[in-house]
Image (cartoon, rainbow over all chains, first blue to last red; front, top):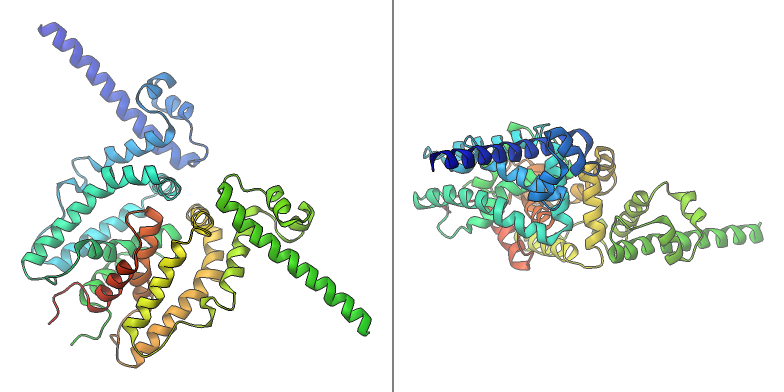
Length: 203
Length: 203
């Protein structure tokens, strides 16, 4: 029994290691060659595995890339543990939006994130998968932080939290996708301040 | 002189007609076959002109599509004449954002607009051209309307008008590109109301 369990666990460990190597290779390669030239062959060579190992787990390069993002979002140092909640909503939101901007500006993921967004724009099925597996859980964490502020009386009682999430993150993502301006920490702060206080004169 | 002028003007008219037929054909075709399968040959056949006529004016299918959007934005019934200014900022913004949503939901332009955005996401040079020729002029019209409201004391004196434009239009464009929810007139209204009043409780 013990030997058999050890053997299984050794095989599972090897699978796990190959799995991670493939996803890491996909991230590296898409950044180097662009999504159009990304291939299963290239990923296999970079990861040091056979092509068949990849096809055993994924049907396409898009599926590999999607799982690479899932792995990233599940890392222990990721945002999966919830957004900061110090009680100071404005400071917490600025910290989170600055972190979002850092991610969007990270050259290691730029091409991969643009490729994913391009695929989503043209493929409603992938968009639905993205909404369910990646954007949905992140959006729930954002709503949780806003709900906590709403309970503390720091946000309007009748505020639609989905509209609030769109108002805070939509401008950042759109500026990044359309390349319509620099994404700086100061821009993150302006969005948070303006969204919280509104465009109207302060009374 | 008169005869010569007449002849020139006839030729200019024919050029103008071919020009418009080509741009209209590009719009129709991209919607039918998708951007990846759009070709100069296909556009020429649909427009009833020779391939060389197209290559005389444009270097690539991307350039044709870009000019097709320019033509659209310059139509007399387009938004080129300025945003509505009835003095009621909230009503005017709701009308404009609802119109934006109608455009984004228009099946005649959906694929073409997604293709243009995809090209922009991956091509900083095209993004710069887009910012200069298409987004820039539209953005100036938006700023003008907001500036008029700011002068009337309806918007905060220290409001950054570019941040305000991003806060109003960013969520719509991002929801459309990421397909993260329905674009309804009610959504446009919520964005305008929430942006104007802010997320904080109304005092």
